[in-house]
Image (cartoon, rainbow, N blue to C red; front, top):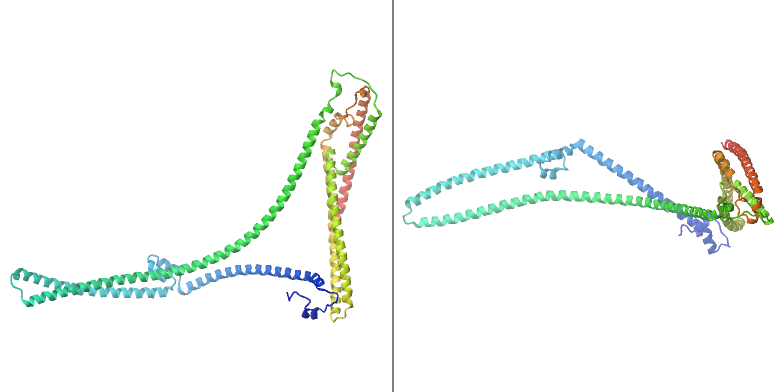
Length: 502
């Protein structure tokens, strides 16, 4: 907070802005924006640092892999290829586990040493085997002598020296048995020690593999967390896009429901008005009665004609195909008017706020200009520079707004010309059909339910209907000529605007 507080003694000495009117509340209001700017810059710096860390981590990984590969190549070039050594020792598992990470020269020396020790042990064992075989031969000869003596001199009485000899031989045999047992135990311990040495070799290799596996798992977990962060960011963006699409689809569905409801209402109204379209003279039982037309009926016809003229005018102005589309268009205009009124009120409120803020800023500027401080000259020079920059930016924004406005006007003219073209194309495509339908279709005044007292003067009304249909045809031709002229004028104006923009 001390770094962002611009009202401390050290900061006041630097910028030199002081006023007696500044209270704690004013200071909080005035420097709240500075704190927000500092926090925003801090967040931006943190984001940039995080991106740089990611890039540096990726570069470190690539460099580490390249260094490992280069080291392997250097070791293979200096001491020999370890892969060939592993392939050579593949049949000897113990040697492969013991000397897999050693140099070829060291492995060769160790193998020579092992072979020398094994040859030495073999020679010792051969010598012992020869000595033992000689002893066995001597013992067998003595055994044969003793058997001969027992066979030929067994009946004689044993001498005391012989008894002592028998005792001594028994003790000797016991000692020999104990010696053989000790030798057997010694050999078993040697085998156990050899097995334990092999286990130690395996144990070291297993520890090294576990260590490497732990390092690899740690790297995998770090990469998984990084991928998880990226996946969460992508998930958040997709969620936001999905919410926007959901809103658009809901609005589209609501508009479609409204259109379907309006179509259903029109269909129901048409089925209800079918009764009025039936001619009253089609019934045989009814008689024809001639009654004069009432003045109210003439007034009703005039009102109907005025309504038709206004509806035609509205249809032509809005470029619509039928009278039923006028009310939704007017409704949409009312909605847009309400929206624009709300926008105007909001802009006025914002304007009032800005006026109040500008007045406060003017008062503050006057107070600051009146204060005699060393840094006021520098402040005024900076102010002039900033004003010049602001004027330049305002000019640029005005130019951009003018270009945008010209483009909007051009697009509006193009849209109007295209609507004219669409309308003319529809008229030209359905000219023959429309003329036949207009001749066959009665007007709204003829579709009314005429009272029974007015059935006398039907021939005169039929003539009037024929006259109105001919006038409608002439009016439609006039509208066509008028729309074609306006279409050509719109195309010429759009061409000129395009040339001016280009």
